[in-house]
Figure 1: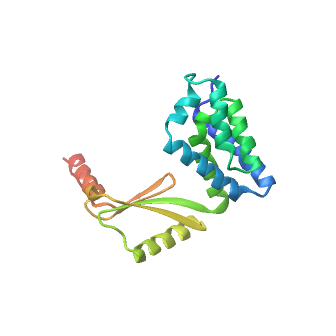
Figure 2: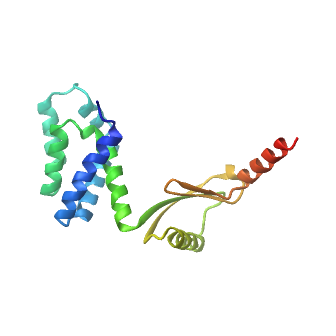
Figure 3: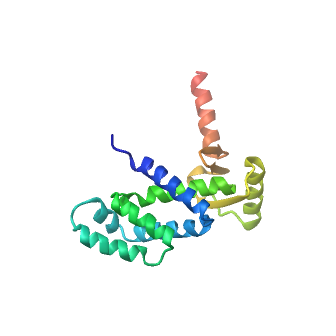
Length: 182
């Protein structure tokens, strides 16, 4: 049975994370895996090159040597393992899983907030404080999105939970109640 990229990401990131913990280099490894993911996102041809057979293994090996050049010994070994097992096309999934584990271990939560207007710094601070208290986390990484389609209010996404306080949602609730009571 073939593993999905998501499953590959979880397995390889777990192994990397555990070794990084043993070597007390989790923070450094986080920086390295994020930098590798950035290289892959800025060069979409890399995923194609490592996924297919359009270039020879020797050429791929030269690319891997370049990718490894600026990293720690642990991360160089990790890149080599990915190359040897034809998993370099899963860098995004491995990075996502690693970051999720890092965030969970360090009490960091990703929050996305949609509003009609840009939030000022005071509103951001209050929102971060409320999320920290409600979800018992140490740090909140806030992503702000201005979305006029919600008409008013805000929509907050914390992990897989959504708190929808938008006017559009209220309109839809009222519309639903009126249609049900006909």
